[in-house]
Length: 406
Image (cartoon, rainbow, N blue to C red; front, top):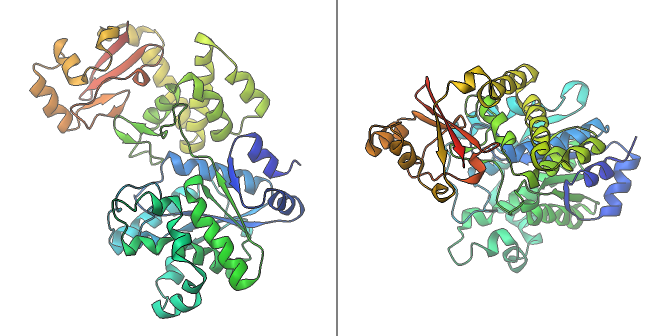
């Protein structure tokens, strides 16, 4: 069996590693216990988390043991990484509810039978810590100037960084050390925005425990233009079918840019890399077949095979040119109109009696674009909204309209 480090590297997961040769050697010679943390900032995981779950699944398939850590403790503070402002403070009840939702979702991707994986909550130890003991035992191993050099803190310096958030790095480092004690954890993995926090844990273990520990980050899920992937007209792309229905989820991947297809196939499916490269090399109209494969495979992993088949059939009926599609009123969007407000365009074509009616329906949740609920009455039509030059609008539950790009 190939070393899983090589598998992750070939598929494009690995961004940074504290000791590439050391991690590769470790993963090749023993069953390694590793962990990834998930802070309960919402009641569902989103597509950014899915990348981490895929990396974790590759590791488990290679025989290693995942520790899935939900942040019942760190969630009380909130990670400042990638933030321009302080996160919303959550109540203990919200945190507990979100952690339970995460546990249920994670179990769909990771096998927890027969000690193949562990699920832990850092609230078990972080909420019991004595503050003075933490300062003396752990705080002494951190220097303020080193912490302020971390991107998560440096980028917040001008706008203000609360002392509450300043403690987050120490809490995450403590998690790693605690998992060393509890289950022999040797490796922490996470998104590349977690690099500074992961290094802090590796160094704390080396200084306080005199043990080797390793860190590895995987690439963030971004589009070819550098923007974060997973944002829609209706908000984030959630893994919960109630928040993002399987059809909406399928359509998101069906509509991604040509340049992102091969990367997403490599990161978000288990298709062999030869097939990934073949599909990614398709050009012009043929690339749409690769997008259909991507949409189906990702939806199948997240929502199950039956839901994926239903989503695919629904998309074919709506966009495939059959009888159902032929009956839908169609409006053509000129090149000059690209970027116009959706509500303005639809009012122009009498979908709404007036712009104010359109805004009212959007506020009531009665308008969807490609089956993603439109939340912003000022939303402007974009190139990415059109699959094969086509977008679908629903007014209420029964009225469908097709927008065709000129």
